[in-house]
Length: 302
Image (tube, rainbow, N blue to C red; front, side):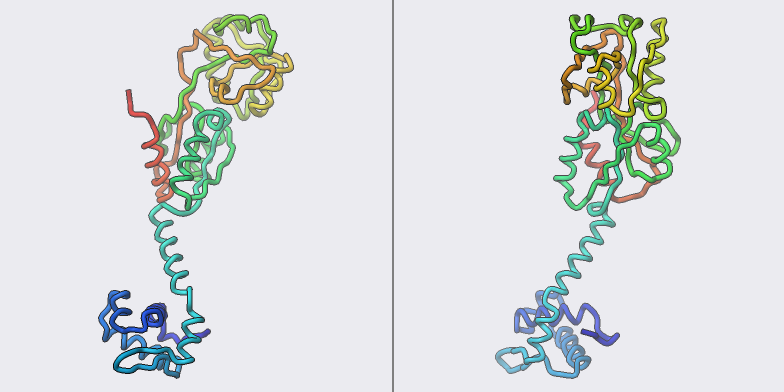
């Protein structure tokens, strides 16, 4: 159906309301306009189409055959456009659209899945594009705004970024089942000085390795690395196979692994933080909505 340039959505809405009510007064009230304005709008529509759409009497209003056809043709169009406008406004307000969220192994094995589920339930019109990304790669992606927010290991202090501590875990040691040290309820890092170690690869786990290596050096040794893995599953598999021990996060308690024993490290009082980081120049309404929900989800400061 092609309309002349003089017609717009206002004419369709007016006729749809009148076709539903079949009463000028009630239709005008539903449109929040004066009755004379509605009458003029319908007259413009009839003039553009070149045919009467209504049969008017002093008591009632009826649709002509042409009016019935037009009402059937436009049925739903006004509602669809209203929904499109509402969705567009929601996107501008930050309650509809897509948000790019990066995460690390430690983050996704901790409390992050519960938080993301709660957010999705509260904001079903915001789709989360979840991207696995090592911490060091998130540093670059945040500054380039190829992701909107990252959940990464440790702190990322940069003048362009803002951050919130999202989660904190303890450092633990992973031992192969049957390892002599597994008989102890807890260990110290110094007790591992003569062990073979399994670590994540240097390109992906560089930030974590730097922290752990510093703690080892403070105790007078450097870990003897037997093999490296690209992800947590690889680390678990190598430990279970008896290749070596591994330093990991206590978030592993959420996903116990057969063949792997977990023991706390009593001489590592420092926490293993998971931090939400974003570029403060990112003006996305979706990001603002996400951050408001994130702040509400965090425990109050002690």
